[in-house]
Length: 327
Image 1 (cartoon, rainbow, N blue to C red):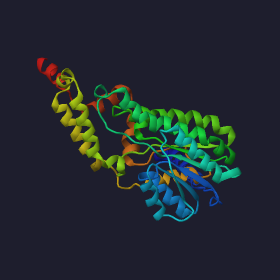
Image 2 (image 1 turned 120 degrees about the horizontal axis):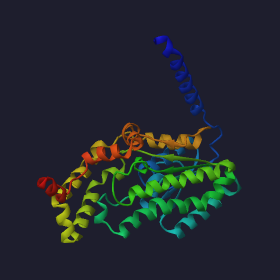
Image 3 (image 1 turned 90 degrees about the horizontal axis):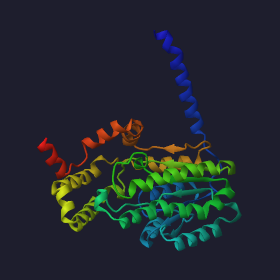
Image 4 (image 1 turned 135 degrees about the vertical axis):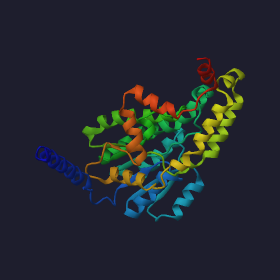
């Protein structure tokens, strides 16, 4: 029996060895290349800007605030340049694109890293308004598209790389509100863009992180505050249907977020760097064991199984409790 399995194990080993060798090949002479990164005030964008600066690359870091830009300058070399950018503002995006063009000139832009994004809260769909959804979609999805469209000619000129930061929630919709739709949208946008750009020599990679200890996973008090504000504005009949215990279950789930987030934040900028510098970058990167072992496998299961599994840990409304009691 072992003899029968031996050829398969050898073949599998050779395939893995080839994949490792192929992905370990890194481009040379990248120190003269420009990379533009959005969302560099903190988190993954901030870490990547510092990482590429240490590598010797020419980093153009876009920050939302002056404070974020100044703090980043203090921790990096004189090569790194900063720019204030609000990706939800088309005028700001257009101005930033002109700034990038004036710097890179005929050389073009080697790397565009669409990292900027945010969310305001995680709340049931019925508790939210169109404006709540729009606020997130305008940044995470439409803002990213706007930045990409403005800078695409420069990336094509350099036959460079585009890196888009999505999320594990871009593969498995587990929370309500605009966050998951925005990330699903980024997946679709990146897939179509990758196919369009193939013949131009431009490569597009998607980063799908799990939960990491960045600001997005640590500002739990803000999420809870917004959740409570939404609850207070709800009509009485909706409050009655969900019940106050549903609100408390949502709050407990948010409070648990920092505990499950990984402290190994370096894994995400490492994936970004590989996408920018590897001879053969991956189409998708899934940093974080929660993403690799939970979210992605769960997303491939039949829908009925996924729904059942996720439903076991979801908050339960008062109306369901009443129905169960009648049964």
